[in-house]
Image (tube, rainbow, N blue to C red):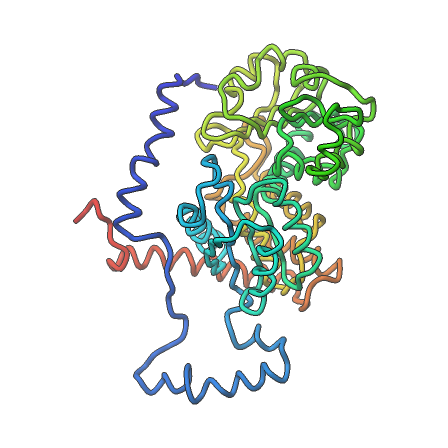
Length: 450
């Protein structure tokens, strides 16, 4: 693996931030509304609006499920945030978070053919936030929660999943966990270790870290073999801050009870010693994870260093320290763990069967299919997970998710897998082709060529 200087990496990492203000201002955002029906002349307005529109309205009034047949509800996803934890910027508010939610909408459309609509709410109270999301259900086929601070993000997600009749997804939790599990499945194949027997250390016990731990357990990792670490050390039952955890950070306390069977105590270095797998979703590096800590891991160690823009440890440092397989969150290193590999295909699959929820089992099904796509191409130490430009990932994920939804009885309609694959492939191909056509015809203008 080629070594790159910090200066080179920072220069590359900073370039998009230099380009973004100019291009965002030029286009005034990234997404808009386009028509999907024909308009031959003004007489067609009588079909799409009054008086003709009253006919489908009456049918939906008699049978609410027909809203999926007569409207775009089945392909609408709301990307909802309160702006309280936007990327690495913190609590910057809903207006400042809007460019991120628009960006999520772009990825949904281009990668999954999903019409995602950004909604930034000026509401920080979690119970009021929940009430707003529940009230939006008639319009949307699903909801993507985004950039909400913890611990309230756990309460919001769990409550909405329990009380809503459409899929609710928090990408910072479920998305990161799904793609991490996918990469780990293939990494374990290469090092020939069984998921139920591995020892896993997770550095970072926020939304992503706790969700990864939960999904790993659902995928087969023995809970007692997991060590989770936060800023105060390893999670265990005798922590000095146990009362605070029990009252304010219940999800973290739950992990104290489930994990760390031997009740090991100590800091990050202590937690990493002897681990087969290190997954870090913590403070950007370099230097957050020390090479000398990686040296203490088990033979054929696996290191996922997922912080952006700089991973907690450089991949070549982890390799030199003995790690056999290394993944990061960056596209310029091998094995990028990227949420965008997950949510477009997962929601495509959930929407296509009109799922009522997205279960952990549906996430695991997506992770296994992600892993299988890479395995079909041929696994290597520097290729354990597909990249976003391998777009067959998304219809294949969609089918796997839909299959699991049907199996679990949370799908509103049953469609054969082959038909669902063709549906997903067609809508994704059309979404990509529309953008290319609009660029070619000049409807989307290249500002650098003006």
